[in-house]
Every structure is written in structure tokens, then in C-alpha cells.
Image 1 (cartoon, rainbow, N blue to C red):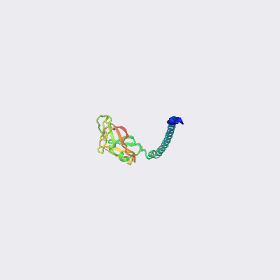
Image 2: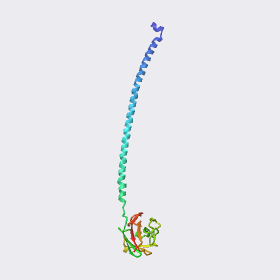
Image 3: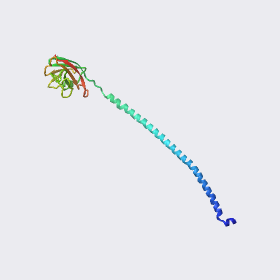
Image 4: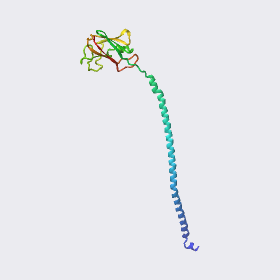
Length: 210
């Protein structure tokens, strides 16, 4: 009691000291717990991220399957239908040529053709295989290439089906075919009936005037 009276703050200091020690211990305990709490929080975050990634992966897999199914569905409808709808037309080819008169040649295709195209003079060319400059009934020289400017015309030849045939035609030239002259008949753009336009050739045949 006397000590307390002499130094009334002594007890308070002691209590403060004890409280200070307890506070420090609590701070140390909190500090020791913080890393553990941080680790737990980080672990939980990692778990959540892992779960999110799994969910995203599953969703992408499902979308990929749906996309594949959609593509398969499209392949069942469009390509097959396109192949079924696409009709392949044969290309007529010349198989025979002979001179039937001094100013006529007769040609035959391997199949019936569109008569209108078979009778069209500009679908036919005559190449002079001997001369650089075309002579006689020729429309191009031996070194010339076929083009729209050097075909036969209606002023040079008349083309008619033989006896109404769609396979055999007679070409009647407005001049006599020179004897001994060597020629090549070239045909392009002729199709079978009902076929779409054709931009290729129908073959060629050589002959010698007689």
C-alpha cells in the first residue's frame, strides 16, 4: 500500500507492460497466421481458376461437337445435292471426214449434236497444213492459231445435216477444193442437245483435196 501510494503509476505501468506483451504476442500470432491465411486464399483462388478452366474447356468441347454436327449436316445436304444436280454432258468429237464432191466434205460426230451448233460455220476452221498463207478453202496458215477472226463464215460454206441426221453433216464450199492440197478441219464449241455452252474443241481431222 505504501508502495502504491509512493508510486501510484507503478501498478499501471506493470499492467501496461503486461498488456503490451500480450499485444505483441497477439501481433506475432496474427503475423504467423497471415501467411497461412494468404496461402489458403491463394489455394482457394487456384481451385476456382482450375474449375473455371475446366468449365471453359467443357464448353469449348461441346461447341466443337455442335460445330462438327453442323458441318456434317451441311455436308449431307449441299455437296451431295450439288453432285446429284450436276449433270455431266458428253462432248461430241469428230470421228470421220471424207470428200464427197469437188466442193463438199462430209463429216460425222461420234454422237448426235445440237443441230443448230453443228450447222454454224463459225464453229469450223480450215488450216492449210502446207502453206504459211492460207490458200484454197483454208482460213488460216500452217503456223496460225485458231481464233474468232479466222473461222469459216456463211459466205464461205453452207453446212447442212445429211438426211436430217444430228450426227452427220455436209459442208458445201463456195469454191472447189484444190486437188493435192492438204488441210486440217478443226471444230469447236459444238455440244449435245440441252448441254450448256462449251468453250473447248471437238477434235480435228486432216484430208487431201481430190
